[in-house]
Length: 335
Image (tube, rainbow, N blue to C red):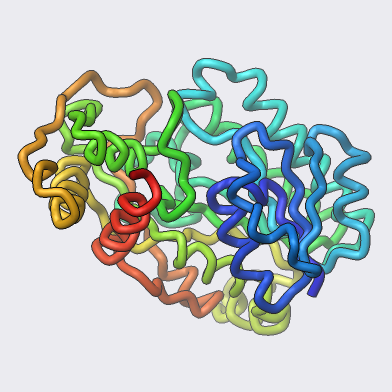
């Protein structure tokens, strides 16, 4: 297949590029605002790989990128809840205007399926655990609003134009190539960087907040299944309830997670334990407790039953295994 991965030089995007290059032609579209050239450097000599440097906020760039493409994996976005609070205008521009541009370009190019990165932030202030796709609360940040609007646009484009759309609601993805630097670094690479440098990480709040941390290999699996599972099979699985209206078009939202929950205190303990195997000094480092962050959801745990039922998804790697793998990778690559 010929596939387009937007944001392909980013953390998740570059991992998807690496995986799909084993069997497919891959086009990477990135403006390098948050992605890095070193993430895709090893792919540049591969004849099946093409890099388009451009911005999804430019509709002509999007049209160029989707030419003759079978599937789109839309990963490009400005992530981070704190970033969106600091700069809601840019977050809105990239995450909504850019998303709409990609949808329009994909529709006009006749793309078979549009698979996009949705977000667990969409659950907002819902206290229900585990999180079930059909039950969401009110958004708690500009970032959450943009990701919810993406889902609404995808639904409209399926209803009006017939394009198949699958939104994968990622839950706190982690793995190799995740950027540990900057003001908006995710918690796992940030904690790892601090510990390797013998610095005390800051835990926002008392450490009781919990997350469904999801290893990158599980995300890759979900994206592949979202591409290869046939239209007929998805519709058959969606229409198991005889008393519900028959579904004839594919527009679905699916949680992608491990299905468990880990508190920030448990996360810190696990990272410290794994890293101290390489550097015993790390075993004695203690965290610093700071104030809670604005816009943070207290607890997040996904139901992955829909992913299992519709896509035959089964997490390849649990959180504990993933943390072990990622600690080894960062220790070897950050030293």
